[in-house]
Length: 192
Image (tube, rainbow, N blue to C red; front, side, top):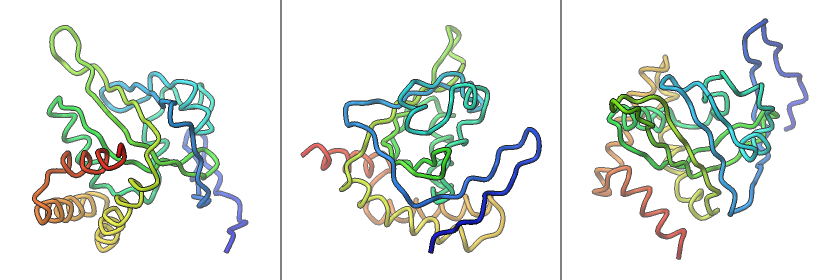
């Protein structure tokens, strides 16, 4: 059923709640969505593809947390793993479902890397995203659905993230894979 109620109005300075529409956006396979953030995840740069696909203007994203485009149906475990990996000064690849400014969604294969200053300290993060294949999304969605179901069994964001992180670890252990191996197995199939 189509929800025709208007989105709730935000108070001054707060972001409005965006309701997912269920419509999917796309972008060309040869395009890259690029953004950079400071060490806290606040956007410092967004390319024209990021802006076009997300539906935001540059002045709407600069200075905002990157979770501005976080889809509510993305498992917290994936973001916990992402931030834990980046904290270890390592790169990560992840399939992520993002939310555009109008509630549409778009899937990406994100490659996120820490940017280091001359002294080795992390000064920010760089993310390049490409369009994943439909087959890759079909492969990752059931895993993400299991993680979301686990999260919904727990109250509070921290408890939900910890529970789904444990489940992700268990699912990967059953397959005798790390998250990186799981993602690369999908990428490899995508290329053939």
